[in-house]
Amino acid sequence: MTIGAALSDSAADFCHSQHFLLLDSDLKAHAESLLAYWADAAGDEPTALTVKEAMLSVAHVDLPLVPRRRFPELLQAFLDHLPSTGRFPLASSWSTVVEGAVDGYLAAFRDDGSVRGKTVRKPVAGVGRNEPCPCGSGRKFKRCCGRG
Image 1 (cartoon, rainbow, N blue to C red):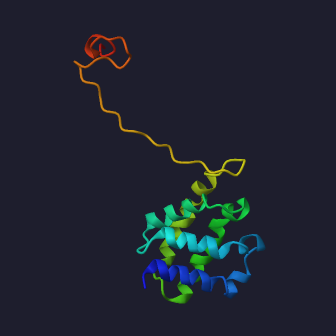
Image 2 (cartoon, rainbow, N blue to C red; image 1 turned 60 degrees about the vertical axis):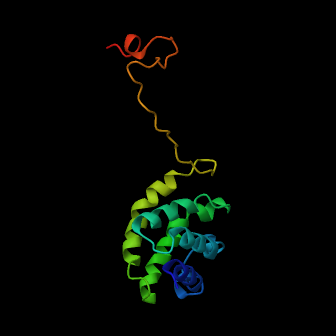
Image 3 (cartoon, rainbow, N blue to C red; image 1 turned 30 degrees about the vertical axis):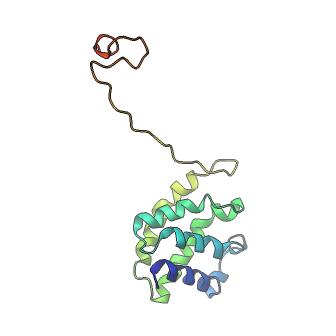
């Protein structure tokens, strides 16, 4: 069994544990599906980077806003529960990563509840001196905007 599959199983176990009973009812309604999504997104060999990116990807799940906004609390409670299972020795380091990523996660939400996307930047090749100027003048770059 891979670590990702074991995390999904542990998410289901967590939702039936005593730790789960201590959470707010707002978090409980969609907890198992959110944690299963996070575990799948974290991959078969979770690292600090995949744990963080998986947490950020949960913001895009098609569920009500309140559980998505409060997901870091749920994830933190889940990661605090994992060491008691004895199956995930890296859970404490993942917990540290999640604590550091909470502000970025919450900042991704807009006031209307939608989630900001990542800005895509295309790499632009530089203009050679003897190529036409990109300003559209028709002159060589070195004789137009390349002077200076």
